[in-house]
Length: 77
Image (cartoon, rainbow, N blue to C red; front, side):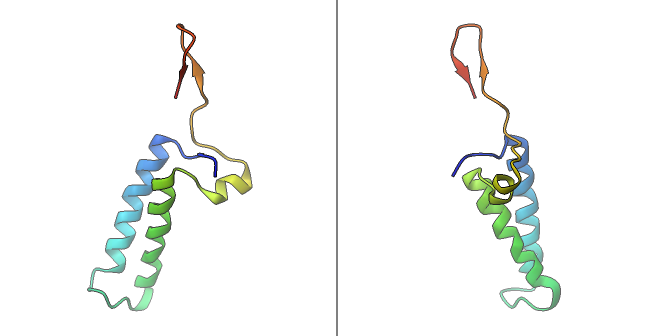
């Protein structure tokens, strides 16, 4: 799976994912009402961990910076 998530996008996904998971489990392990929607935070955490988003792949989007060539001729990531 190609990496298509940049560093800022990764940090935003981690923060939002943790916030959504905290919302889901704010009353303990019993997820009731709209709290189940907070479980989508796990998806954000997984995509941030692997730095690959299937939706980005389908749409051809990448928030990852392109590889640049430094003055010494080495590639920077």
